[in-house]
Image (cartoon, rainbow, N blue to C red; front, top):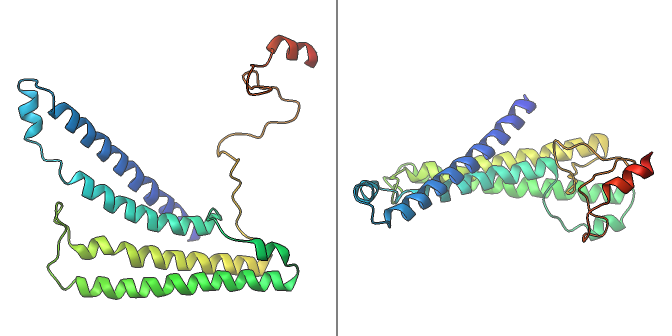
Length: 208
């Protein structure tokens, strides 16, 4: 069940990002070509309304940010101030970490509840977005959905830390899909001093 939720979370983030990228690209090309005095093509492009593209991208990035925040909690990629935590050791350090995680869960749960109440209230109105004319409750639904998911991730990480004593950690230098290079592996196109390429023949002789 958790793996399915993880995959759904990642799929939604990737889909929102990909859709926003494609929409922005098409809108820019449309605006550029519409300014070219090409008979027939210019009239055709001017007849296509792309005024909704910016609004759609804003909403997509809002949804992506809310789900991305929950993903960040799960994978440990959020930036945090840990000077005090690193100075502590033993039970005190563990208690402070659990307190911070539970505080995050309380805050995001509160935001999610307030957001859900706001969505419920605005859902009984006729408010729509300016360009897409979407019901505004659908746009603001990102607040409770993303906040409750983030609250769940805080509780999940806290439970894992209490059981194992480990927190999710992200290595910023690691690139998914790339294998680690051993000390004896030579990368021919690497730079010794960031100025001059390696002498491939020289390294081949050394390895022999």
